[in-house]
Image (cartoon, rainbow over all chains, first blue to last red):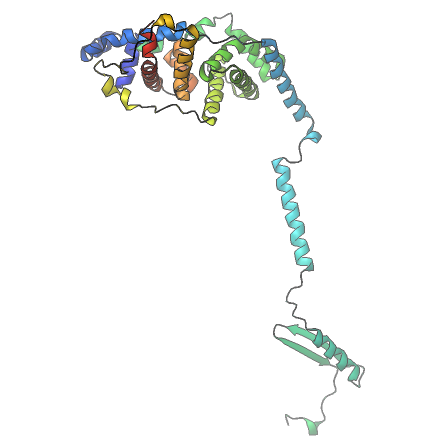
Length: 163
Length: 211
């Protein structure tokens, strides 16, 4: 089903024929002067068509060909391509991120709750113990410091508190 | 209507056998990377393309730039041209799209596309589409004044309406050709023509009534 606009436009342009034309004109008898009105507009538009000719057409062509040549040159020389290309930026960004993560995991101390005083205690213990086999180590944990002494002799049975 | 729709394209009829094969051959060479062939195509269609674009933008420098943009886009996408339409129709579509995009970027949307004052219900029955204007004697109007009035009126159309007016009234293309170029239905073309013409009648009645 054609809309009124389509039928009207076709009618103005003489593109309706046969039953379609008769039917349209029967339904819209009062539109007769619309066609003459439109023909005046059409005549005005066509007679006043003052569109200028293309000035300097050879220059027009030469500019287009120069642009095409520039495009080709850019394709042929990958070395001259911009470093700001999207793929390069993406790979560059990825690389920087990787290096950043590596540095972070390498140099950032994890669970380092060290207390300088604990090291001092360990050193004192080492120097104060009589046996050279005794080894003092310090294990720093969150909220606590464990000092281990390895190489101690067993307690004499008389002084063993478990007995 | 069917007769019109079925009528051979005037453009393509104009491009008789002696011309169209040349276009096809040139296009093939372009697709193989021969820019000299494209130079020939540009030389062949530059004037028509420029005038079509000018009709829509009403500015010589803009028309020059846009026509160049259109040709460069055509070169870049010529490998996608399958020959389903004539080269000129395909080129025309690119030119039209470039021009419509440019007009949209400039914020030109035309005044209300479906102006109530010119709605179908008000057109029928035979109502005049403009209030009576003081007649301006044609003798007093310089030719450039008339042109300016026409330019001003066209400037008030949306890009899509400009396109159909230029193609139909100035380039004298068929509905089917316009539809192919604008990638829309023939019904849409006719509908746009209806509103564009009504708007121009509204804006220019005092001019053509006094001619």
